Length: 344
Image 1 (cartoon, one colour):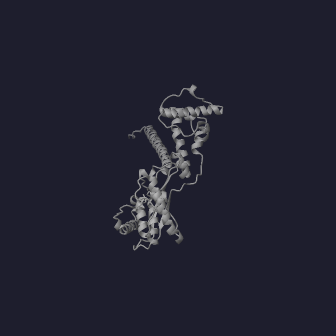
Image 2 (cartoon, rainbow, N blue to C red; image 1 turned 90 degrees about the vertical axis):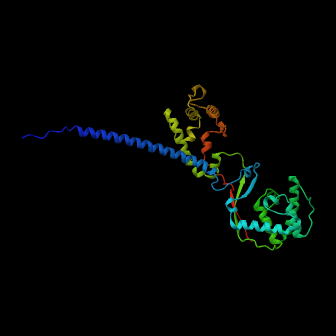
C-alpha cells in the first residue's frame, strides 16, 4: 500500500509573506499618493483663499473705469442690470422724450451718458421745458468750461425742484463723469416735474457697483479686508508649503508667527527654493539680539529680490514677518455695491 506524497509546508507561508510584502508596498504607495493629493488640495485651497477676495466673480468692469485718481470713486451699473427689460425701456422713453422736446433745435440724443455729460443738451432741455434762457456760453470745449455750464444748469434745476421736496441725487461731478445713475435720476425728476407726456416704467431697479481707488494693495491686504475667515486656511497652506522644503534640512514649522520671526527659516527657505547654498557667514544662524534678527530678515528680502520678486512691503524691523502677514485684522468692509431703485 503506497502512501500519498507529502507536500512541502514551506511554500504557502513563503507565498503569504510575498503577498503581504506586495500589499504593504501597494498600501504604502497609495498612502503616499493620498498624502500628496491632500497636500496639493490644501495648497490649492490656500491659493484660492488668497485670490478669491480679489476676484469680482460676476461683475465685468471695463479697464477704463478703474483708471482713477487716489481715493476717487466711480459708480457703475452692473452689466446684468443693463439688460433688464424695464431698465432698457426707461432709457428709451427718456431719449425719445428729449428728442421730441428738442426737435426744433435739431438735436438728436442717441446715448445719455455721451450726449448729456457736457451740459449742452441739458441746457437746451431746461430752457425749452422752463421757457427761460440761461446765462451760459453756448459752446464749451474745456473741462472747466463744461463744468461751469453744468453748475449753472444744475443750480437752475435745483431751484425748480427743491421747493417741491425732491431729493437731489446728482451733482456736477457725477453728471460730467457720465454716471448713468445720476443722469437717470435727473431726467426722471425733470420729466415728472414738468409732467412730460410719457409713461415711465414703474419700479425700475438696478444693481450698482462702486469702484474706489485706495492705496496700492496686494492679495493679503485684500484677504484681510474681505475674507478674514479664510486666514486659517491660508496659514495652514503656507505651513504645508514651507515644510515641504524645510523638511529637506530636517526642519519643521508649526507656528509661522514665531518660527519665522528671526529670519533664519526665511533665509534657508529662499536657498532651498532657488536651489543654492546660503553661506553661513551671511546671516546669523542663532540670532540673539533684535538687530541680528532684523539683519536676517533684511538679507532674506535681498534674496527675494535677487530671485525676481518685488521688494516686500513690510519693513524688516517691523517684522516678525509672518506676524505682519497673518495677524487677524478686522477692517470694516468698504462699500462695494448697493442697490438703486427708481420709483415712478
